[in-house]
Image (cartoon, rainbow, N blue to C red; front, side):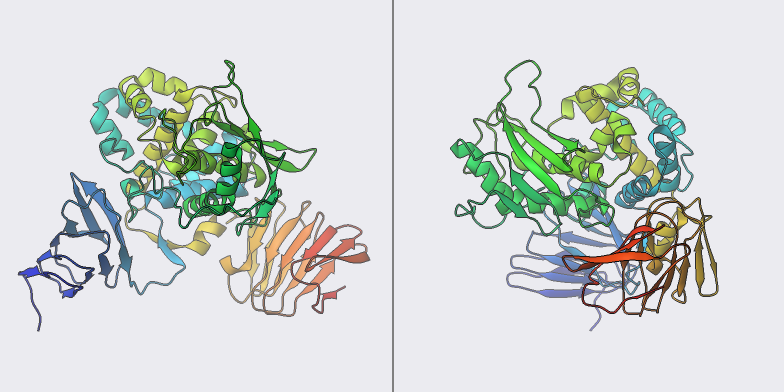
Length: 542
């Protein structure tokens, strides 16, 4: 029987409540309830707890906050209000019939993902790369960094602190969400608090006594020296048990960046414990890349962590410093950006630091700096220096505010309600630099980046002609029998189901070798050609 415009009281027990396209008021009551919402009604839900679930039927959704309530919007319509649910973990899902390769890019997180994608694929650096990423991610709403800064500074100057932060940046300093790019303040389904940003489950693995380990995300951690204290041992075991894996997963969830990416050129990081009490030792930790050694370094300053609670899974510090698990996630974001070859060192500090602050959020730990900059637009402008280098907490907070403002304003103006496919997002960077005719895809000499995924283009493509390129390329083939015409540089082929062939336009194959499960081919002009997982497969090259 259809019920509409009624009050539904679930009472005690685990209930299944199905509502139609009318305005209903629902009280879930005690127990683990599941609510399936469909149609065009605007429902009000009381008593929503962290064990309840909501299924949005037949559409994509987004969430925003209003006071202590969560507003769930389906399409462009306000679909339901969850009363007093603002700081609760939300379990909201969609059974949308849209295909997996179609996403709303007008969410704030998708704006940031587009921004990061461009930086990962452009061959430009510094200001030029930043201008291109801003223009691309905002779909042209902000042509470049200057136009974005000008609008942001004007809003900061003309509006009250609260109006600027909440209405323009989406930053709400009054709630428990830390402002992380995956949290409820930017439309995510889960409120990310200081303690659950980096999730820890299970007990510490106190039996772990090795000096290295490798995560599922492809990064190998090495201990520089044997641990000299109980604190150092705890940090090393906590890295292995929780912090490394969870931090890397958070980064991948935030930006689609991973050490498993084909352009992640460094896969090893050395953990070093330092103890700097000098004036220069005001850092919690830092990350560096040593090109001569081919490794990353994660240095943890024990001067700030020698009193932390080494029985706390988050790495709590009584003095009020940020939890150590969040510091690790911060530094690992630097690490993956360094290794992916995005011309990291040429970007302004407010971008490199603002981006990693987005990973874990800073509303709870830099709230005073955020308020100060919001109330002093000249100081905010100064924090957004385009010169690379090091700076103060102003650059950290200013960069975070800049990216939150950019994400919110771009999302609100991004071809409203436009849906584009992931393939369109990925290929539009190189829209003018590849040519598709029939079954042949030709890569021009102006191609940006070093990756080419045939899944981003027509499924009919069989031949990839890259002879015009003077650099290497990582190619993910499709299910067809693909032929690759290689130019200069080192090539990596990720084969699919087809019987693929490699053709060299000059010279020949000089030797072949095996590295793990990969087959390495050495060519006179193309350099090294790596066929991933090609060790025991029949390969055609001519």
